[in-house]
Length: 195
Image (cartoon, rainbow, N blue to C red; front, side, top):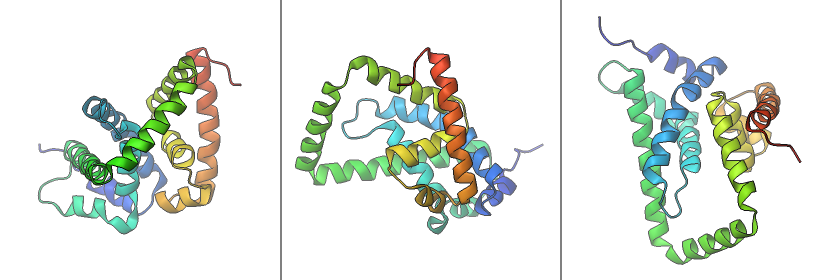
């Protein structure tokens, strides 16, 4: 018996099926985040969370046709091959970002200094709590983490989130509700208070 094909699921993702979109994110985001964190943890200007976010935005954007190219490759599309494909896409994004940083080093230095100064003004405890909260949201394994990244890290409006991901406006609103509930559960789990 050969490997199980995920071709039908990928076609459902391409068709905009919400359950399929949830499946691709829930299945692959945690492992990809772990690998990105290990690979780029000390890279100036490269944050694992940003790379994860950009990878999924790129892969799920219909006009980019990334998943179609994945399906067109020879062989049976499996979870293992998609995982490797996503890793390659993330590394390509990281490489492009590095190249851009090398071409504009003064911008990077100025931005890095401003970011460092701003971070130094934040209490260390608050930064740690935010990082633990982000990890908790990611562990919950639902699309609310991607919504959180798109909405609050990238600054997209709900309409832009819907346009980028292909989710309906109703689904986007539901994700906001899911995120609110996930935040409450993570705050309780981590012993933190909402302020």
